[in-house]
Length: 116
View 1 (spheres, helix red, strand yellow):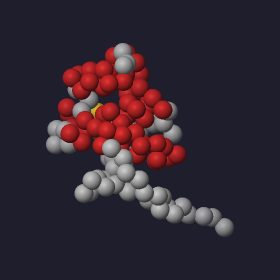
View 2 (cartoon, helix red, strand yellow):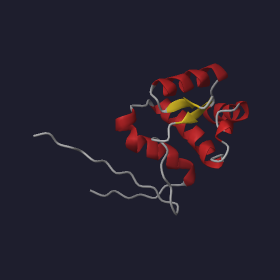
View 3 (spheres, one colour):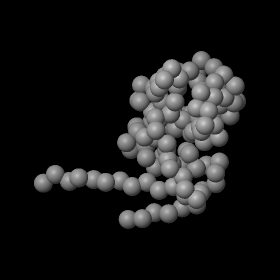
């Protein structure tokens, strides 16, 4: 089965995360929080320490209408699910979750091994 869709850049990360969420088991709000950080991660790919900095957290809070404490709680939930990890003394998005985007396209493949 191949499913193809076109999505705006603004809606890509939430749509992508909902597609792979069977494996991630994220809540709707966790998806929105992670999607916001993923947008910034793409923008600051060469400076990953900026993604979870105070100015970016403030932008995420404003975008999602969240308090600083509430955002910190969601960051902790995402850490507990290993979607956000500590790496080299900074918080980063787990590389296993970040989609590969080539020529403005991304694809997801699911492989199932079926036991007899």
